[in-house]
Length: 341
Image 1 (cartoon, rainbow, N blue to C red):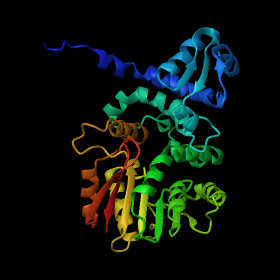
Image 2 (spheres, rainbow, N blue to C red):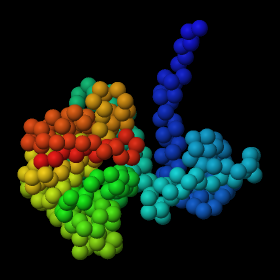
Image 3 (spheres, one colour):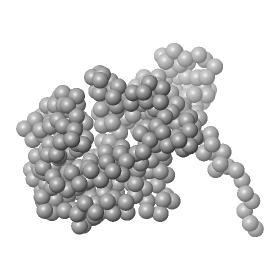
Image 4 (cartoon, helix red, strand yellow):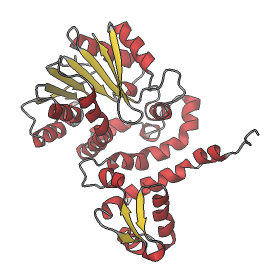
């Protein structure tokens, strides 16, 4: 018998913003930090968060049904607690906290995505520049406190992938690494902890330097990680045996992507390695949903920026002179594509 058609998957995707907003709002209220190492009834938790009683059971139980909270018991006496995942990643004091990224998704991107149709029609970004004439990054780099928050959010988002690179790539053949767009030097710090023979340069714009230097000093790695300031569209990249770019190439159009790839090639010695960490789209463009959605997000944020496939990366790098390639799966939909000089 032929299975009858049903609209279930259509409705699941169409209403998925409901679930997203519930999780993002829980992070906005810092719900998971409130439950850190404790349990509460709905009444207790609602009072702690300053919530009206009407929505508390629906809100908390939706988080239970989505496996972001656990509940012992039913009814008013039921007690809520974090799951192991929310304890690890959404409690603010946790070293693996990624809530900063979710806060940005909630406060910025959730609203901008409402204008996806306009972005598709015009090819224009739909972020702050649309209403103010000033890009998000211009505003960000002019405000040191806001820049620090953004850098911490990005670091938390990338930590698992950077740790996977430290484990999955053979650094034993090399002595020096330059991380381009290094932010808080997180990749350098994680790889340094795993490979004590390496020395690093974390390269980013001048306003980033004080934040990166503080992070490096706190990690006790100032003798092995040098924070270097510059503009990668103006200045040559610091030379090293390995050049890394984590979520850098997808920020730009093809012309600027090629500039960065050629700059990496020039900064490497023979047999040097160029690593990019991205949500690489599968070559057939059928499977990596997150990578495709990320590319649409770059349309909304930057207009002509886009994500790309492994085949794209190999083609571009071949044109720049690279001769050998490999891909290392990382966390979730993210991979490290490697080109060798």
